[in-house]
Every structure is written in structure tokens, then in C-alpha cells.
Image (cartoon, rainbow, N blue to C red):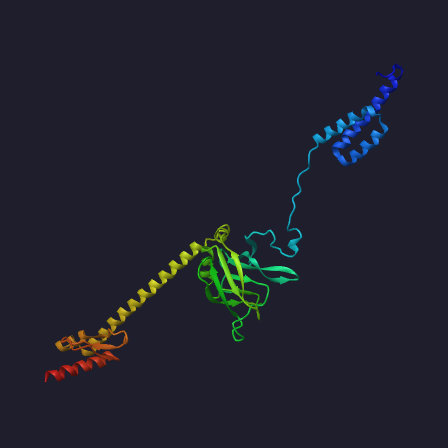
Length: 343
């Protein structure tokens, strides 16, 4: 049944009013769905039943077009890091910006790597050791500075009261057999280092992927620290440091020095032999045939037990005779021998 004609003016006015409310409702629904739902209830109470279905259609349409906001990332370690700073951590080398000496221009910088397992606690918080490498002008620190060392959080146990700056350790690279060594302890007693073999130790670090170090705190049982060292070579090269090339150059220089020392020693030995042979000839005088024969038969002993003594080897094969402390004594003995056998 249609509506009476005389009510058509009021109906148009109601429709316009309700349309304005619908527009406002649609905007609010899109922004805030919960508050929109409450407003829907209020509007529906004031509006006629004939427009209820239309309003619900608008609401459903707004819900269909609503876009969800970006997902919020949840960090499961946000609270745990206060107790364990390594929660969510991955092993990596840190480059510590160095300093440049204003007088001589020496540049000092560090590479540092945390252990994967804690070495103790401090104030209810886990603490981790760090393996540190000191570089001066692109080379391992030396002389007054320690080049490779491990910082820990406690007093390292010394070998004994008499040996306060040494500590026994065991080290293991990858799947190699463990090796026992004696390391040094710094004056503050909270760091240890491979005393006397730091260059060799650094070369080992570059060639391997994992280091396990066993040491002891004072009056405590031994504990182990693990370091994932696989990226060390790349980290050093990023700083312009090629340890493998430095090691090869150092080994080559050492071989050359050893060869030079050996050559010098041989030259001195040859020169000394010639000098001593000349002394023998001078002593005998070499004025007679017998003197020349004796001079050719006396020389430094071939026996390694008497490298600086003289021996006489006569032509009849009855020798060698000696050792004699001087060429003169050997020559005198030979002369007397010939005299006795010539009678």
C-alpha cells in the first residue's frame, strides 16, 4: 500500500535528513568501526524502520572496503636482553675505530669478537668474553702492546704464586686435537694471550673456523669459551690487512737470513782452514820435500767431536793421528814419527 499524498512533503524532508546522517555515518565507519557501531545503534533508534535495511547495507559495504594497517613486528628478545645481551645475536667481528698518534702518526685499531657462550654473570646479567686483535699501521701490535688476547670477566688463575703472569690453557681449532699451552696474563689479570707466539696464533685463527679455549678463573674449575672465527680473513682484508701475505713475506725473510748466516759460516770456515794451513806451511818452512809432505798431511780433524783440533793423516794410511790442539804440535809429532821410522 502506498503512502498518502498529503504526507509526501514531510517524507522528502525526512529522507534528506536521514541521507545526511548516513553520509556522516559512512565516513566514521571507515575510520573507526567500533565507534561507528555505537552510532549506528543511536541513529537506528531515531530513524524509521523503512531505512534500517539501507543502513545495514552501507555498514556492510564499509566493512568490505576497510584496509588493515601494517603488521607490527614483535621482538621476542626485547625483555630478555636485559638478562642476556646475546638473545637474537649472531657471531660477527666488530671493527673498533682506532686512534692516530699525534707525534709519530701511528694508527692503532682493533677487531673484536664475542664468545658464543657466557663466561660468567654480573648483576644478574650474563657476560661474554671477547677475542681482540690489535693492529698498528696494518700489522699486529707488538713490543709495548699485546697483539692478540682474550678479555674475560674475572681474575685469571696463574700457574703458581711464583709465576703470576702465566696460566695453563688448552686450545682446539675446528676438529683438530686439543693442545696444551702456557699463555701470558696481563697486569690487570682479566685478560690472557699466547705469549711469544702471537703471529703464529693469528695465522692459525685465519686458517680455521672455530676456536675453543679452556682456561681457569682463580680458585675455580676450568671453563671453555667458543669463538666462531670464520670471517676473520675477510674482516682483516676489509681494513687493508693481508695477514697471509705478511706471513709469507716474514717466512721468506727468515729463510733468506738463515741462508745468509750459513753462507757466512762456511766462508769463515774455509778462510780459517786456509789460514791455518798457511800457518802449518810457515811453521815447517816448506824448505824440504819432507816439510811439504807433512804440511799437506796435517789439517783440521774430520771427527765432529774435535772441530777445532788438528789431525795428521800420513800417506801410509796408518792415521789419522791426533787430535792435537795446535798445528805446531801436530807437525812436531809428524816430524818425530818420520825421524823414528827413517833410522
